[in-house]
Length: 325
Image (cartoon, rainbow, N blue to C red; front, top):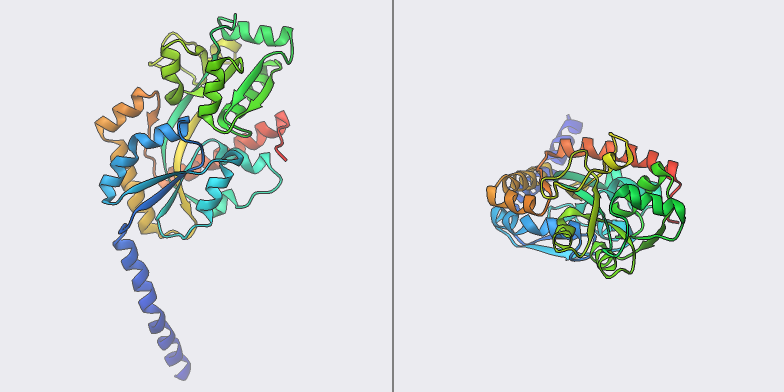
């Protein structure tokens, strides 16, 4: 009897804390939310997230403060997210590097699969292979022929070691046998500028960040990474067409993650808000005008996709032999 009474009293003692946690989730959000984008301002990931962040703020009734924390292929920014309080007031922007980083480095400051919880995938973003207008190559085939004829004489920019532009280029070089020199920059915007200025000869750009440069002739588009041609660039062939491999496709993707331990009710509120905003016709139109495909998946759908990304990039990175430490 005394044992049962002790158990009952213990349960009653923790009840206020359980209620407080539930109440906190029900009242969420009641202060500004921080969205950490682990890439510099102006890059493809940054641009696409900013297209809908203000609408999400309106739906949630709280300000969303975008905080660019770049470095180490998104690890610096996502480490801040992983170590933040799991209360829904620190969100992280994730992309293709999420599935690659664990295999590019021997040690990570956080566990990708355990310390960050998926909320929703927000967009697919095709990658466009571009060259400086001065390059004589008028097609992907001609570019690869030049690279093979003079190995190591063509350099390419990326948004950093382990970034989407780095991984996609190395994958392409691996399957075609061409050789180029990698020049990593600190973000997509500096890499794009290097391509425009002619500092490098080639750069893969996220279509959302590069379409303006392509339309104005500052960059010459040779191929796109999707299986089908993109309606925004209908005259640009796919990489699959150019190399004769019909299954070659790689798309950048964007999503939102939160620290482990974040209440399920908070994750659900965030997902519902994101899905609602990404279904708005005006928001979809802006994202599509930037060349991206708006999504708004469930947390479960994003978790499944991330698992497949980890499997895919582990295989590719080991095959190519990329290591960053």
